[in-house]
Amino acid sequence: MKQENITYIGRFAPSPTGPLHAGSLVAALASYLDARAHHGTWLVRIEDIDEGRSVPGAAEGILALLAQLGMHADGEIVWQSRRKHLYQAAADTIAAHTYPCGCNRREIADSRLGVAPDGAAIYPGTCRFGLQEGRSMRSLRLRVPEPGYDVIGFTDRFAGEITQRLHGESGDFVLKRADGFWAYQLAVVVDDAEQGVTDVVRGADLLDSTPRQIFLQRVLGVPTPRYLHVPVVRNENGEKLSKQTGALAVAPGDEAAALEALLQAARFLGLPLEKPASLDAFWRTAIPAWSQLLAGREGAALT
Image (cartoon, rainbow, N blue to C red; front, side, top):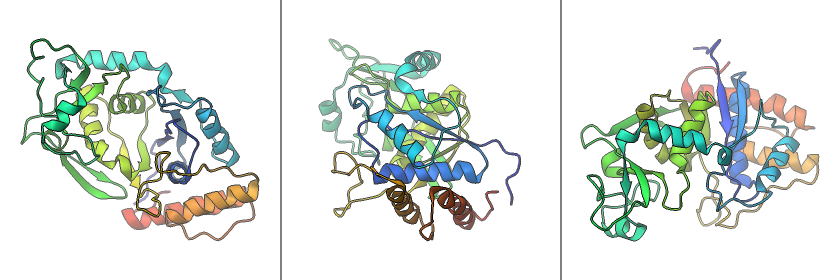
C-alpha cells in the first residue's frame, strides 16, 4: 500500500563523545535514506545532554562530515545542552508520576533483581513510597505500572513485534541523574515530541530503550513515532563499535574515500549497490534501493 501525503519528519541524533565511526555512519545513513525515500524532512540533533562526556569539537566534526558526505539537515541544528528548560518543564508536568530516589548504583546492583535488556540493573523500587530515613535525593525516577499493567508493545519496522514488561525488565527508571544531568530517556522523548518527529531510525542497541520511551510518551501525552532499528556494526570480537571498543573515526580525505565509506555503510544495510562515479550518483541509486529493501520487509512501497 502506498503512503501518500503523509508528513514525515525523521532525525539523526549523535552524541558528541568522539568522531563519527562506521557504526554511527550506518545509523546516519539509514535515517537519511528513510527520510528521503519518504520525501520527508531530516533533522540533526546533537545529544550533548551528558556534558561531562562530550568531547570539545566532536559535534562540529560530525556536522562537517555529514555535509562532506552529502547529508544536509533540513533546518536548524538542535543542541540538547541548550534545552534543559524543556526537560524541567516536562518533569514538572508529570510530577505526580515521579519520586526522588536515594539509592546508589551499588545498592541497586546488590538487589539482585537482574539486569535489564540494555544492561542496566533493574531497580527494586526501594524508594517508591518515600526516601528512607537519613537519605537525600540522588535521582528522579518515573514510576512504571504494576505487573499485569506494565506491558508495552510496538511494531518495529525492521525488527517486527517487540514486547517488554516494564516492571520486571527495567523497573522505575531515571529521569534525572545523580550528577544533575537529565537522563537520555526524558531528553529524547521531549525533543522528539517538540520537533514533531514522526519516524525514529536508529541502531538496534537502542531497541530495548524504546518501550520505556513509549511509556513516557503516554505519561506526557505526546505522540509515539514509528520506529525502525537497524542492526549495529560489530568488531571482530562481536562488540558494538564505539569509542570504548576502539572504533576508528570515519575521516575521508577526498570524494573517493567518502564514496567508499558510504558504500560500505550501504552494503552493511543490505543495499546491493555498485560503486558509483560520484556522490550525486550514490544518492540517486541508494534512495530507491532503500525503498525497495524496506518495501520487501514491510510489504508496502515507501513512495
